[in-house]
Length: 222
Image (cartoon, rainbow, N blue to C red; front, side, top):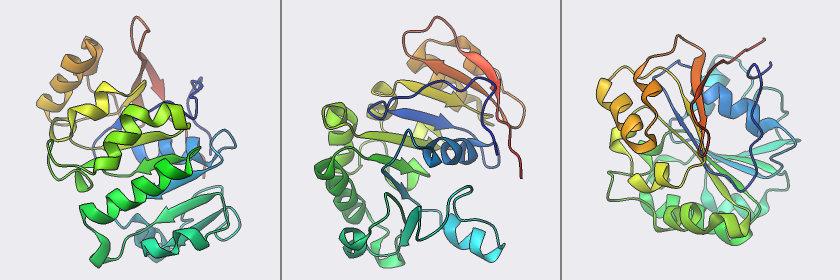
């Protein structure tokens, strides 16, 4: 399993925003990057229950990594402090699928420091653009000083808090079906290329400070 044509270097303290429709490749890109040694401490917040889907399909839960050796899966927040692996997947039970538990997770990451939070679908964490966990704001605005970063994935950029894109450094934009989502990205970044829809497993990559985004390909083996 490999990643992009020329993978950009991302620092552990830099926030990353990834947008794309279902099946476009956004989750695979995050999975490839965050499995690497450049990101030793990662917590994935799996609100979509992707864990159960992969187990049912007899697929690796985290491609390239070994469960209980490289990462641990937990279902209740109280088990966080018992984990000994550097990477964690938190698949909240139904009772914990609410903003209070998400906030507690983010507070734990913020206080732990040196940790990357991977949110697999931001809309399930932020109930609307004005209601989201308090410590998500702390991570987005003050995480750099604690060497913490958030990788935010979403299908609907128009439905997420503005604080996310405003504080992100790296943008990976896959196919988005709705024109208003692409228009939102153009408005926020002033990059008109985002109005164009890439093909499957293709994406626009843009880093704040660069002149223009580049079109790249996600290559997946196995």
